[in-house]
Image (cartoon, rainbow over all chains, first blue to last red; front, side, top):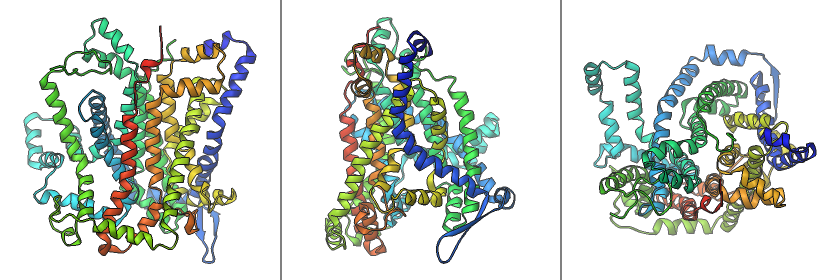
Length: 314
Length: 292
């Protein structure tokens, strides 16, 4: 980009810059109004005690770091819940990515009933939002589904996970191969979470699919002319070309995992808000936010070294 | 076996796929597919169950005496609401259509500029947007409400639509696609031929990332269609279908059947749109005419 710019006259680049701002501004204005201002104000609340008045409205007074201290020191369950959430996320992220990439690659082939399969893999996304997740009926369905394996119906994944979570089996494996405990724990958590992982992968599959569909077939044709096997072209073409989508999916998965309603940190923040404890809730949210941001930054830093952008190399 | 093997392209020629690969592929798809589709099948079968079968334990998927009573009940309940029920449907459809179209347009425009233009402040904006991805709106109830009321958006359709327009995940997704899938050369040559910048965006860049914005459309429809009550809306005339159905469902256990019917009703629309959008994805890049 910068090379191109130097070649052209200054006025043109100035014109391009102005156009860039014109294109960006509608979105950015909305973003500033509805997201950024609000986020900044919530920083302020995290340093304040918010009291709602019985006659309506609220008053605030500055309390410094005490909200944060309360969350980190006094309320021990909060920090331990935070760690548990982070650990669970780290365990399920690789499986989630591998699974959704695999399914997306398969669903991108020519097969009979492809549209149907794609729809099936998107169904959990539809099921997990809105009225379905909130209404009592959903609880009926979900709890019924959860109890199903005590009855005659047992889903394959649950059967598999049940087999893996048997403690005896675990110790047996540990004895046999003397695996590192963390590896065993990883495998165990992974196996127990298979069902949730599969159910959370709808959006990721969709994003990967869109990535695969946008890859130019001419690349594969050229590779085949040169005698490239399909296995090689997966590693040399597909993977680099969809690497930006892998990054999107990593970030989406982390954010999705951390902001789910069934996540216990979110639950505790939510309940603080219900009790109109906005000061503590904001502080908790900011601690949580910083933890996520740190994690995302680390993962982003590592992952973006491997991301390949088609346009960038020239 | 004339089928194509692990082809990663969509051209007609490819390595032949063997029976074994076929079996493994369908087998895995079926296995995972069954796991994913069971809750849906269960919801549909619940909607067809008479109340007498509803509470069998363990729950069963097969319905002995399928009935449409639940749907009839639902429509009866819908017909005697305070505000005409069609109003709720109209509201939700309006919000979904306007919100989705606007979101796709604005975020693609912004993503296009961020990916293919150079201007001061670009990286700064993008950084802010990525950071804000991680922050969910629950904790910002008070400041959000103050901003909405300050802008005079309380009790209007805009309070549903405007925040949806600036949803940041879609922007991030579009930016990655624009960066990766749209060759700068094509845009340059179009500009060379005298195409205006908006024309280049609309006629060159957008068709190339069609799978991306169809995905975006799906995500946006999905979230807007299920929008429930918010604290910004007071008038009954402006509330959504989801809200109305939830009010019907507050009847508790006696309304379980009706609730199942409502669930199916709410699910059907996104699924239809999804199937439609997926079957609408045609070869995009193959027609882009890139010669290197």
